[in-house]
Figure 1: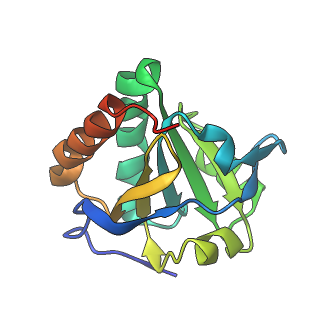
Figure 2: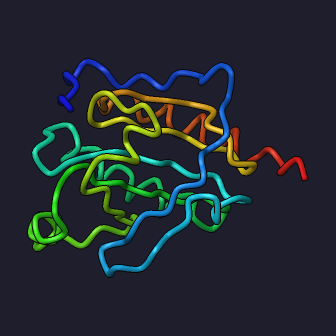
Length: 159
C-alpha cells in the first residue's frame, strides 16, 4: 500500500454505486463492529495508516465533520490498515480522536474494498451504498466532502 500525493483527494461519484460488503472489524477496545449495522446513517469510511502523511491531516478534519453532522445521522469510521493496536494507540497518545477507529491489521478489509492507496475514503449513503470515493486527501477538497455529506443526509433512506 502506498501513500497518495498531496494533490489527490478529489471526491468523485462512485458509478455504479456498490453495496458495502458485510464486514466486521474490531475497534481499539476489541469490540466487533459490523459495517452494515450503520444502515440508516451516512458514513465516511476512511482507510489510513500512522505512517501516511496526508492521513495526519485528514483524521482531524474528519473529527470536525463528525462534530458538525453527527446529530443529523453521520458517522466516521477510520480503518487502520496493516498496523497493530499498540502502534495505533501510541499514535493517538496525545490526542484521542472523536471518530471511531477500527483495526484491519492484515489489510483484508482494505483488499475487500479494493483500496490501493492511503488514504482512501468512501462516503456511504443511508442504504449502505458507496456513493463517493476520494483517494488521497487535501484541504481544498473539504468543501466537496461537506457538499456530498449534506446531499446524502438530505436523502431519506429508500426502505
